[in-house]
Length: 181
Length: 181
DNA sequence: GTCTATATAGGGATAGAC
DNA sequence: GTCTATCCCTATATAGAC
Image (tube, rainbow over all chains, first blue to last red; front, side, top):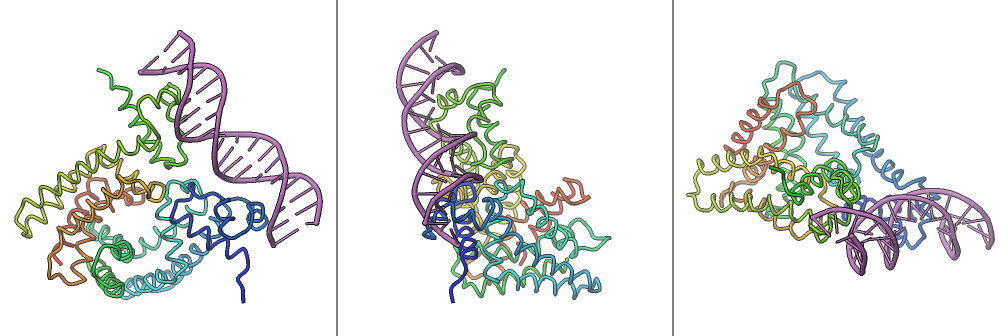
């Protein structure tokens, strides 16, 4: 069973945008890799920006799902721990991680993109759910760092002699400890 | 006493690259803001890439200075704490922080840049100095996160009601605690 | 050291045939 | 749904005058 062209465009675009950067990747390159012409892309997506939008949509939907869940829960330490655990689960979904990396690496190029603001808002909202009203600055910073700790494992992989699994476990442990502050 | 044109080019380029992204910023824009023409830029820098190289050079030199220092010290907990403190000092030097932000936001656009590899190596080397041979995975991840914790304050500034100073102090506290693992 | 003018290339996007 | 052909624009970079 073959994927449809639209999905294949998304996949190739995501990979090239991540590897080379958004601006540095031309529609010609994407088309060539797929063995079609630029014009064919325009049948599936109205603009280059539209391709990005379709990618971000996938991720925003997941973040908002998570946000909705956490807001339906009592604001307890266990809820916060569970939020970190669930976030880690999202993070290993293949598509999600790649989109995240793409967005991290192309912040300025996409700065004006309206979809990005929605995503940033969602991330800040998630982070906010980890904090409490009367928290000290140290607690605030510490907990804001918790979700990021889970990302950290990803760029460590390249340098270290640890296995991916060891890093994942350790990152989770560090993230949960950051919540304890 | 007026700055020379070369320095002014660096300043404007750095600001625009950071705000708009490297690829999205044309030499024409830089030239217009300075009130000169594109061709004038080419007198001072051989290529657009050369401007970036000149900016990164500033930062690599500082990182390597720091690396040289830490390697001349005994490998004690106090040395590691002092490394974190010194890194934080570098981070608030105006030029350094702006270059850092520029590099963070334009990772992929600059991915092929040879200067960047030198910088990445220097950062990993610094991080490595925070770890010890027999460290557990949790310690490794935790300490690798320490230097990053200092950066974290920067993107928190936008959202939070904390003052810049409170965030700086809290980030330092969090970084030092991450070393304790 | 800065200018004007231009070479050369590549980008995103569209029209219209098949 | 994909093609060819093309429009229009902007980019980096250079040549040569001042």
